[in-house]
Length: 289
Image (cartoon, rainbow, N blue to C red; front, side, top):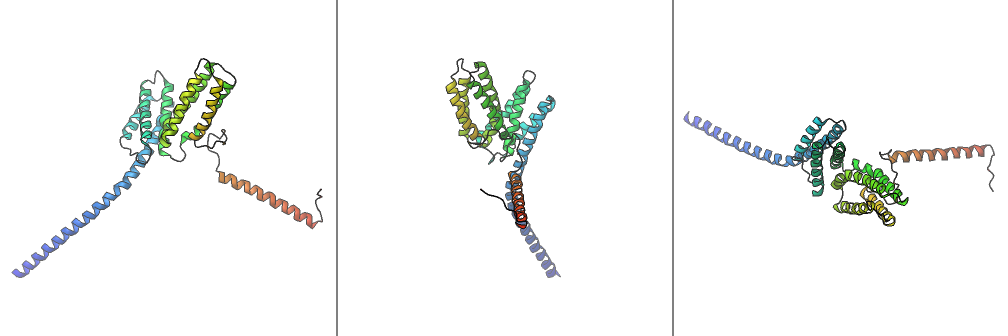
């Protein structure tokens, strides 16, 4: 009986040790799996947070237009808090992160000065809206739709210079161009190489000096505007000879247009073949010189 008891006791001890080893091994495997999962979860969380930032920036812009300052301040607080948890790794450059942070600070300052300058808050919130969208949408960000606007501003300045308009008019035309560029600048920094922004900034600085001069040098001004057209095309990723009057909103898919054109060509050829066949059947021919 004693031997039987000892045997059972020994078996239980061995079983317990085996169970303990199995539990530890399972925990180790689970821990390794959990260590590999956070990277994926972190990526999903980061992407979701960026999407939330983009959505919140859109809400902020709408609330600014509605003059709902209570919601504007609440939205600014949510955006400021979310920046602390976003992982920008692989999303943009250091310059892009700095530009986004500066834009948030600018919106905060504009909200404080709202009663004195509503336009400043609208522009700041538009900059943040475009910057957040540029961060969330790498392929077709909204700021690229400013291409025609900037080109029109440049054309207006060029026309004023060619017509020898007053210094006041030239300065005003330049101010409009500069404002539109400043609106998209943070969004552009997020996606473009730093040298492209440096080129644009240097060109605008020189253009500002020429446009705000008391006695304008129309020849030099015209030369700078022509150079600026090339820089603007490069900024928006456009070809040099591409039309400046591209629709502001994206048009229909080119593939659809191609199918429509191909269908028309096939229909015309089919009809011509039918007419030729019909003419041959009725002994009709076309006279050629």
